[in-house]
Image (cartoon, rainbow, N blue to C red; front, side, top):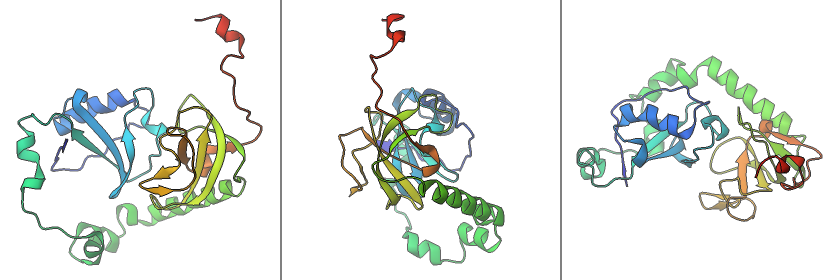
Length: 231
């Protein structure tokens, strides 16, 4: 698989878009047809996970400001990939630590001039977001039954709280959930770090503000009169 190199940065607002619509919007930017796109969500250099479920909105994933989408072309025979495979080009590379120490970078310019994510407004938003999550987390404990709803996602997912705290994959507080149904993204581990144990696809991590604890028993999919209306 070869990642598509795009010599520019684009910003999009499509948190209410489905997977296929996102692919269509990315095609004119990357030149990669939706049928061979593989989309991965990143926070800086940290991989959060794939965006690959046609039934889910982008807003139902753990998406936050300043994240990025990496689009990979799964067709290795496409001619244009021969011109965009940067692994064939000798490059000047810096580690994250080395880049952070430099004073002649875009990041240094933004930081010195309080622009973008370094602005006072962005700092206030991050502080408010962290405060809201801390307040929400204080009402949650391991073992609680809960219901999770991300963004505009219509389906609320039920499960049990298995972890509360900070993680290695992204700063801030997270709640680890073992869902009642295989609607998650992992088995309680992310990037080789284990936080709890559950069957594959039953685990997930969400911000505390998206978790409601209470009397949420496991739902019986067959215990409903609606089943008599449709087969």
